[in-house]
Amino acid sequence: MSCGQNKPQKESKTSEYKKVSCSFCKSEKVIKWGLRKTGRGKVQRYCCQECNRKFTVDDGFYRMRNHPQKITQALHLYYSGTSLRKTQEHLGVFNNHNCSYVTILKWIQRYSKLVGNYVDNLKVNVGEELMSDEMEFRTKGEISWFVDVMDTKTRFIVSSDFIKGRTIEAMSKVLKKAKIRTGEQVKIVTTDGMMGYATILKKTFGLHKREKLTKIKHNLVIASERGFNHKIERLHNSIRERTKIFRGFGNLNSAKTIMKGYEIYYNFCRKHQAINKYPYELAIPELKLGVNKWLDLINLAKNRKLYNKAYLNELGGVN
Image (cartoon, rainbow, N blue to C red):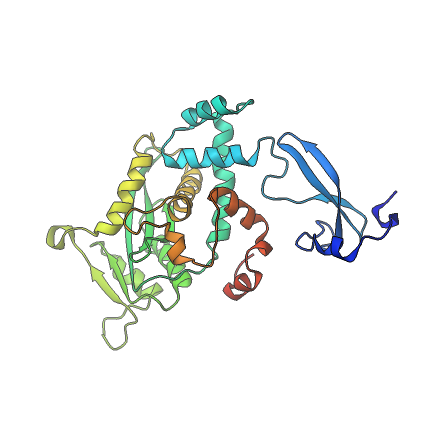
């Protein structure tokens, strides 16, 4: 018997599930339809009153055999400094069924991409100064670079990427993304003495030699003359604490994903000692996360309607 042949539900009962829409026809006229037993516990099933099809809501863990708490715990342990194999050992102590360290790496890659695509489309409230710098790594024995742009007021990493070489084109993509996310808020961009930054800032932030025409000020800091950019160097020290045990990255795509996950961890899951807050609390005050921030971010990335639909529409560019 199809769900359309059952007795009509009360109006209040149907409106209770108005946040859930049908996976097939997108109708919001859905009712609960029992529970489905899975490897991670019982999952609520729904029935659509328009097309009579049954479905479960994809909360980011669809068809996953492990519980969301276990998966997000593994993500947090890894980016806190625990190796893959030690993370596996830790999970084995507190869970009945353990998983392979390779599975944990796949979780990291999967959810770093998922959450990264979501948070990259959120505009941020920043101060007047951004700092940009690069870190040297090894990928298959060859030199590669992690480029990041950080807001000095909120300590929020506005943009980052893992690139093969410090070319004008590759660096410009990182700075352009920072410009899109910050709009007209930035007045100063601080960098080190790399020769290409003047050209990059001209293409992305509107830097001009003439003071009347320039849109920003380029604060050039050369270590031998004026010391270091301490705020972003402190960020790099935190990154080195995590990556110093690496034997290099296996390939560029894997490096991009892992470092994207660290950016998410730094911005949303790690309290900054200098500001005594999570950077996102200052940069994106509208975003409210619970104790398990990885879990909330995954849910938001999968079901963006749960997070202030009007605000997301205002941002634009959210897929």
